[in-house]
Length: 101
Length: 187
Image 1 (tube, helix red, strand yellow):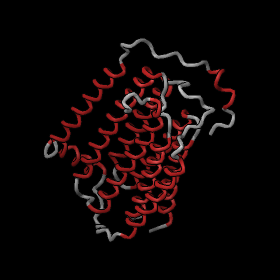
Image 2 (cartoon, chains in turn cyan, yellow; image 1 turned 60 degrees about the vertical axis):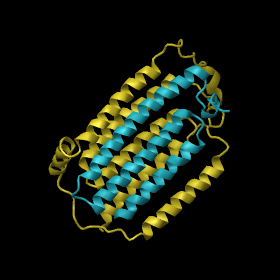
Image 3 (cartoon, chains in turn orange, brown; image 1 turned 120 degrees about the horizontal axis):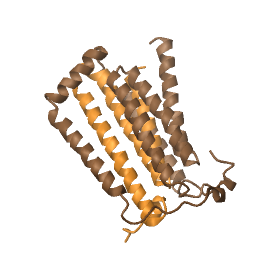
Image 4 (cartoon, chains in turn orange, red; image 1 turned 90 degrees about the horizontal axis):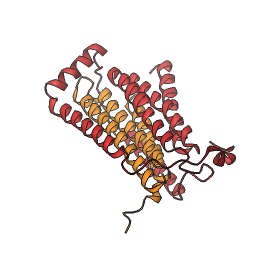
């Protein structure tokens, strides 16, 4: 399949991840949705690299930095979720509302 | 385009998207966590189909290895934090479904219509390509590489500081027997 096939899969994966982020009540499930969205972004980058600039190395550097950000995001996000669980005794995102005016 | 590679592409797409739907819809959060694995494997397969050999291996190591284990650890540490008989999604469900379907349809329409300047070049073989990436990371792109490693170090220390317990122990989860009675209809 050509470029459009990969981009379509990436767009669908991103939409599914967004749906998870919006609808899930469990904070860890929200983080799973964010992981799906980051995967879609990396897939998009590599599809463009393969079909538009296959000899360039810059897109791969972008994807490597994106992977690093995704790993840091997962570690920090889960640590924050554990803290919320400790402070509120709940893991639902709509019950951690102390900053709400 | 021969039928064999089309078949491989379609099965990789199904392997990625169907588990992703289960990740966002399954009622049991542990099932959702395990559904991440085939999804990540499908993305790794797509990387292999794109001839991005280094990222195929990286996807297996970081996502299917590290991040999945991290998510499952967090699930176990917050065991029974939510009653599995309650709904796992909020009241935005129909709106979110509408918005995400519209986004997927609209962006697919645009990117199919757009005249992409596709080249006939092919990527270099695995060894050459990975060597070029490694050279770029210590020559032209040394600064982004170092910034990425600083970011990882900051995330490492930050995660330890955040998760370190100085406010008493994690609350004791409710016993399993109290909650498992109504989970027969899970998934």
